[in-house]
Every structure is written in structure tokens, then in C-alpha cells.
Image (cartoon, rainbow, N blue to C red; front, top):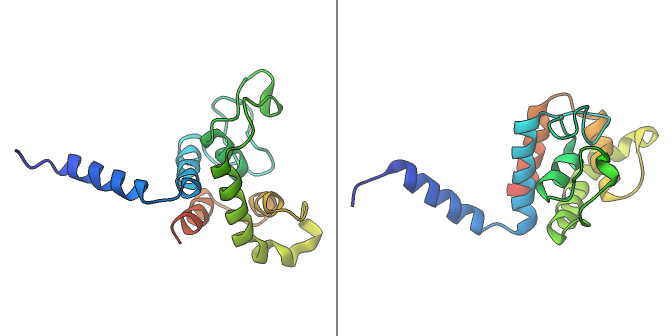
Length: 140
């Protein structure tokens, strides 16, 4: 059998992803969504729903396959969030809570999702900051 470095790298990545919890994989899929679409603050999805930039929560929702219908927009959902989505939101919110809690006047609410939304909309400046946080929470 011939040595195929690309195939070996693919196998190694598949093994690595198989070792992760579903919520961790979902966070990494959200990174892929942000890289493909771009990142936005202040909205789940920017103009052009199907191809628009996404915030952290929008990226998680697309990664979890529960945003549908370009015409009806974000409020027309195909399904409720999966257990992986709920766990990813909870773990990400728990990680971000100490960062956003000191800015109570900007805090959107007191739930894991609200901590993520507050962080997305007021505490980061670049796409790379978003990706760094998602990787940190996903991979520890």
C-alpha cells in the first residue's frame, strides 16, 4: 500500500473528532460556519439570510441544522435545538459569564444564551476573537 499523507491526516482528524462530545463537535462546526459566512454582531444573520454573516448563536443554529427558510427568516425553525446545541450553549455561556457579568448594563439577560449574545454583541472585535473562544471552549 502506498503512503498517502493526505489520507493519513484525514483519518487522524476523523479519529480526533470521534473522540469529542457532540457539543464539542457542534462548536467546531460553528467555527466552520463563521469561516464560511463571516461573523456579525447585533444580528443572528446579516442581510442575505442564506449567505449572510452569522453571530455565534446564528453559527450554532446553522451548524445544528435548525435554521431554515430564507423568506421567513430566523423565526421559522425546522426543529428545536438538539441536546448538543443546548450543551454547547450552556458550556459556552458558562465560560463567557465571568467576562460579561462585569458589564451588567450591557447584559441582555441571565441565561447561558444571553451571556453568549452579550459577548458577541459587545465584547469582541474580530472574527479571530470569536473563533479563538469557540476553540477554547470546544477543546479546553
